[in-house]
Image (cartoon, rainbow, N blue to C red; front, top):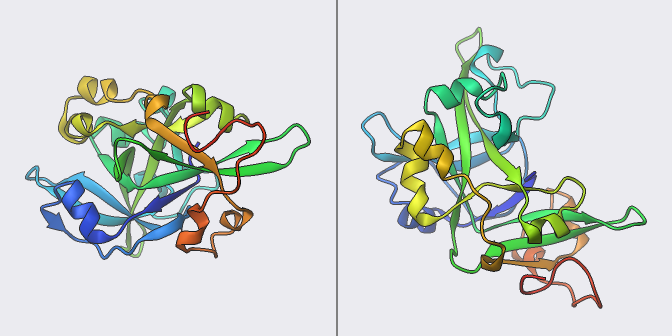
Length: 236
């Protein structure tokens, strides 16, 4: 799964993702958490890339603006075509990118203690997480646009770090972004594959990231190297 991540500032996002129509106000965040408004890139009706802000945690169109009681921050790649909350956005081609500079996952030790890791990419300073979005209208006419991050089985590195569920977010290669946003369903699905673990960097970070109230650059500062463990400055 993916439950926390880091976003850079607006200008970096607009340059990296060739946003033609910026409809957002974005500030850098080192601890993006569910239910917050997050930056999202999608293809507009004319095909031009839009930068918009959406609620993280998908509210399906049929929910009439009421967030479901179950978690919708992540959509499993295995069920995006069949799950009730996601099959509509998938069929309608409501695919999007959630820009990120990195993300956090937690390793569970044998004694139950959890250790946070920060993961970023060696070949993309700013990257796109594959997502789906939807629009839901309440009885009073209030419209909620919201999104979810697609997840998939973990690669070797992420399986060692995120050992509780062995999942990882669907990270898109630069060359696959257009296929995900505007390609056919088959082309979009082909873009969803585990990112090469050799292109990912992971290291331990402090416990302050556990609270979304903490949000500053120090959250991604590495802890001293452990004698052994699932992650390190380079792929473990």
